Image 1 (cartoon, rainbow, N blue to C red):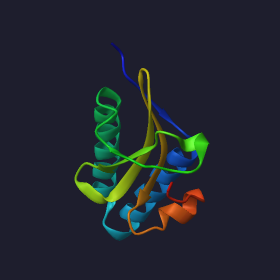
Image 2: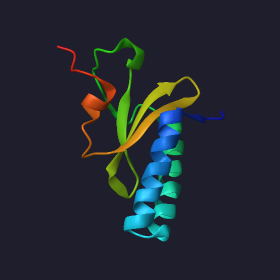
Image 3: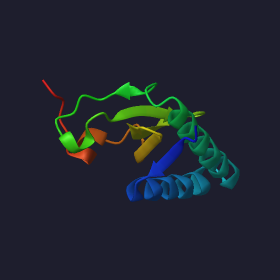
Image 4: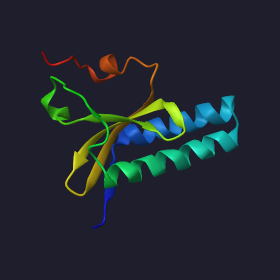
Length: 109
């Protein structure tokens, strides 16, 4: 089976922002290693989409969303939705960001 990784536009922008930040603050080599690790993490998620922590959200458009960490960059989170043939990467953001507010989300009671 061929597993696919679909990246939302915001996730693509997040990757660019992370790359630029890391390049400026930690060096281009670290930024390039981040991108490689992110792509590897996406591929792993596409093959095993249910390994990430499921988020119970009130926003039905994001039903089934899960989170996982970028390999070797534990402070950078991947928010994704499992699909029949892979995953849709919704966002890739630093763990210190208020991602609940970012998504305009709340926990489901």
